[in-house]
Length: 132
Image (cartoon, rainbow, N blue to C red; front, side, top):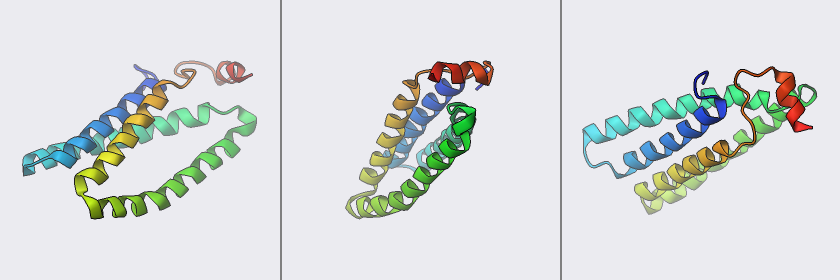
């Protein structure tokens, strides 16, 4: 994150998570399953690390805890809905279910890449000033 920046790391790791989730969905051999699962996990966990570094910096100091609380609440809602959607799609086909989640990763990565500013190496006051 200190080389590429938080926004770029987050976006690229989410997109890579989507790619490897899709490769996991279409794998046809045990080595392919294992390799795709390892890389999918690596990039998904890396994306979480970037997300937790970038998100608090995106809020002005006065709103930081409220913003993080709201973001955390949204993840809880998604965490409750995702298994239901996944279970339904799994009943149709496993590749379909994983492809939907892969697409969500890729769309999230593209959204992260389009965020308006980078916080790497900047005093927080400079970042907050851009929001005004």
